[in-house]
Image 1: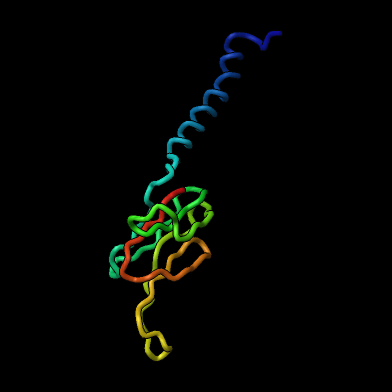
Image 2: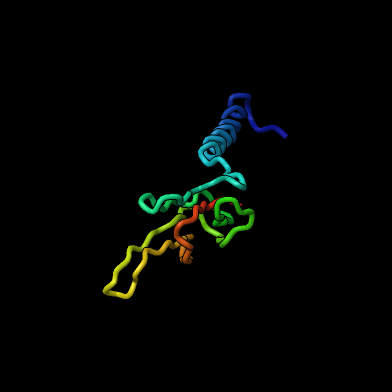
Length: 121
């Protein structure tokens, strides 16, 4: 079976080569997030932050020095991950600041005064 002249065959290969190069370029921009990698940390109530999950997958909120996660979440790339401190508001009955762990739509209270990190599982 032949596919035409040599110049026509070269043209047939070009789209395949081009597609391969595009795939390589796209994959290079999305380096995998290794398990155990710290994504965001809390160690100072004045410096809380939320970040976008870098990849689809499972994440765990760990207290510093502990090996088991306090909470886990399955997130899609771009969903929010991090911590928030809710300031006291005596008018609404809140007497002390509260630390909240955030993973996508999940919210949970954490004891203020400890150090925490969200890590890729």
